[in-house]
Amino acid sequence: MKVPGFVLLLNFDHYRAAATSVATIVLSAAAALYAFSGEGSVQWNSAGLIFVGAAVGAWLGARYMDRVPEHILASTFAVVMAVAAVRMWF
Image 1: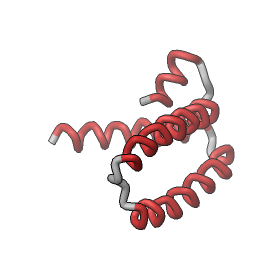
Image 2: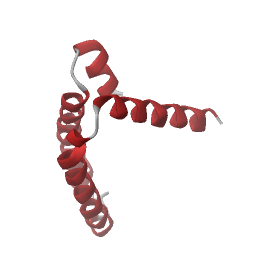
Image 3: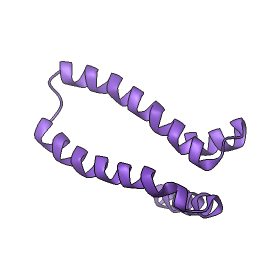
Image 4: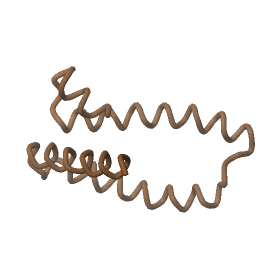
């Protein structure tokens, strides 16, 4: 929900909104990781495997995002949000 907020309320383009959103996610995830790891709640083997796939996907997405026209990004995001809303409703 941050990306649409950045676009609609702060007048960011979709590329800057996505990058800013990722930065806030990284910082908040680091804070949560600190808390969870201190409690011994993290399954490090699983987290490591998931991280590898997520890191590759994130890098590829960030690297090639600028090749996708902004209106396609916005439309795709709107469709994904609509599908998510319907799935949550039922």
